[in-house]
Image 1 (cartoon, rainbow, N blue to C red):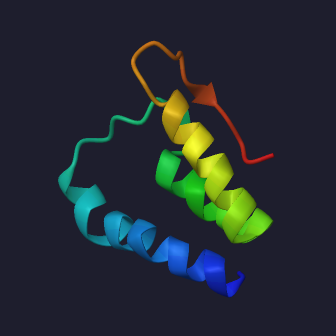
Image 2 (cartoon, rainbow, N blue to C red):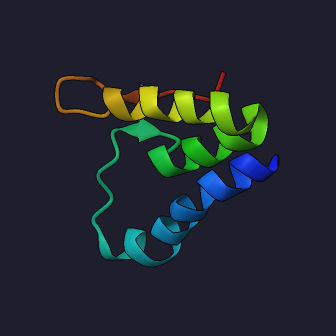
Length: 72
């Protein structure tokens, strides 16, 4: 993982460790958005991984059917 991707992943790791267990499992996608973000950062680095994550989060809304959506 690049240094930029590592820094961007810190809040995601915090969320998954401390906040995620307190919230109900409501993600309409598989893998979950936080897992998708970590995979995108590991595979594509900080810039493209962040862009893919933002695009995924924009699709995570009630009018999208969800489903299986792997990291490209």
